[in-house]
Image (cartoon, rainbow, N blue to C red; front, top):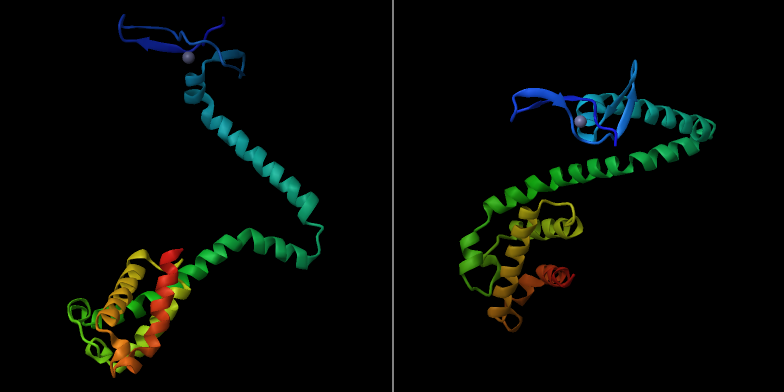
Length: 199
Ligand SMILES: [Zn+2]
């Protein structure tokens, strides 16, 4: 069986000898040279990549010339749109996320976390001011709408607060108290969170 023609240094006998691996490729430069798989990677991989790159470019240019160039302009635009769609979507998601993220962060900073997590009061105003309630509802709308693209830690924080508020609501038996109306706007979000849990 033909062997690789590369010289290797043998550490045991302290001398150079021919590689003992069997031949995988024969490369023609000035004369045919036999290479094993390992030496082919070392000596000719970079040239193979250059040749592959040029061939891929040639094939793509051929495809563009035969399929794309002769299309009417509106169809060309459609093709380009579908090619770039993942990039467009990624940019839109980043933009939406960068708008919602600071809003939620500012809201969370102002929040009285101790009251929400440790107190059990039937009145919603014990936990949130009227302004915070409307902001909370608005941000929950956004969180549920864009839950798949928002950062995980932020979603988790909003869900935790909503869940705890719901537990407080149930424990205080708000439905049988005079504070029932204060919670009306939040009930929808409690239900939304429940449907999210089941998914
Ligand atoms: Zn070899």
